[in-house]
Image (cartoon, rainbow, N blue to C red; front, side, top):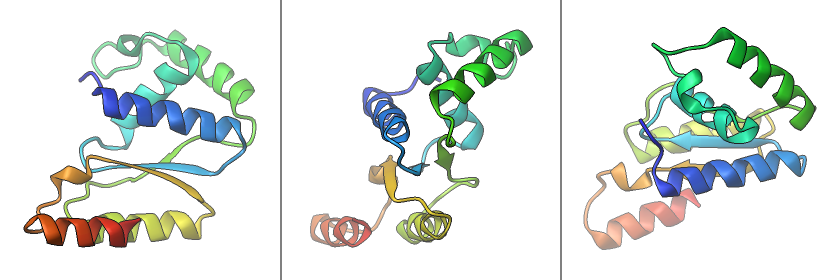
Length: 130
């Protein structure tokens, strides 16, 4: 799965946020933790994503990624949601838990997958999330 342009931009923002010393989380309603980690590792280190994907995994590439990540982000990397999220309440609960863990910068991807009603209700709920 190749990330969409919006996901790619969000991952680049996450990378820069971490470089700036911010505790950062990427919350996605589309991808699970492993998929996000793979894409982030590839983007952050310039590694070919195919070398990190399930089925084509290259242990040597992962060793290179670990070394590069340690140099790039000595204070820690990107946090993500561990489970699948299906509703705005799921997203908010996940963000609250991550905030309790010290995260102050959040990137939320695929909020459009939340089915919460008409345009007015969607605007109200998204505003609540922000």
